[in-house]
Image (cartoon, helix red, strand yellow):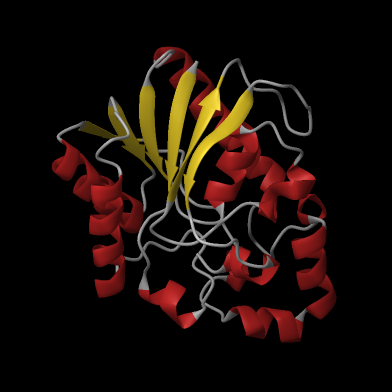
Length: 217
C-alpha cells in the first residue's frame, strides 16, 4: 500500500484576487509563502520518503519549502502541470460566470462535458495524471510520498487516487496550503471506472469550497 500525501501549493496573487490561473505560471504571494511554511511544519510527522511536484513555480516553491524543512529529496514531474483553462485564464471567476452562465454552470455540475475555449478537458487531464502516477505508485509501494499539485488539477489527482468517477471531481476540499493523506492499495482504473482500494486516512483541510472556487487556481 502506498500512502500519497496530496498537498495544495500556497496561494498566488491570482488566488487572492479570485482569478482563474489554470496553466499560467505564477509565484507564491507573501501569504502563499507563509502557507507553504505552515504546511511544511504540519507534515513533520507524515514520514515522507520523497516529495514530487508539478512544474508551476507555486508548486515548486511549496515543495522546496517542505523538502528543506523535512530533509527529504524533491523531484519535479514535467506532466503534472495544472489544468489548462484556455481563454478563461486571467479572468475573474465572476466574469466567466456572467459572460457564459450556462457553460460555467455546466462546468461546475457536469465537468466532463465541457472544455474551456482553447483549453483542456478534465478527461484529458485525468489521462495525463494517470500516465504520471501509475508508475510512481509502483515505484513507491509501501512508502509515503508527498505530491504538491495546484488546483484544480489537485482535484483530478484526488479523483484518480480515490477511484472516484470524474463526475464528482469537484467534491473534495480545495483550499490552498492544505493537505490530505490517501492510502492507495492497488493499481488505479481508467477514467470513469470504479474499484475499491483507496481511502482518505487523514485530512488537514478546512471546509470544502463550493464549485465556484474550483477554477480559481
